[in-house]
Image (cartoon, rainbow, N blue to C red; front, side, top):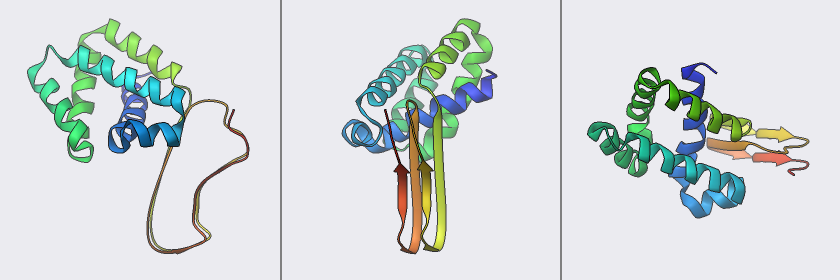
Amino acid sequence: MDPATIVTTVMAVVTPFVKKGVAEFGRAAGQAACDKAEQLLGYLKGKLAGDPAAASNLERFEKKPEVYQPAIEEALKDKIAAEPAFAAELETRAKDLGPVLVIIQEIEKADRAVGLHADELKSGNVSVTQKIKDGTDVTGARIGRIG
């Protein structure tokens, strides 16, 4: 995996986890995904602890992810470039997460909008965000089978 893909995959899991919190993320994504996201965040904290600016931004990211996400992405890219072992470990952890689907819909007016329709999802993480001002018959996710 290239560094940008690794960072995108990691952030696609960590950002919804931070935004929603453990309990809500666990309900939405399942306990296994919640545990992996929590472990990944803990791993990142440990790896960025030696860089005071990155560690501080990670603390801020946990409070305001939408503001500090770019700073964390940049810190991860820098760390990946500087440490091949970190890149390899993050790639392994990203692959272990399974597929990551991030669906964002920002719609003024919607009739019968569906964020995700899947017949089966055996593993991975799904995050559906819908910002709809005026909508009827709106579905975030419809999955025929999960496990």
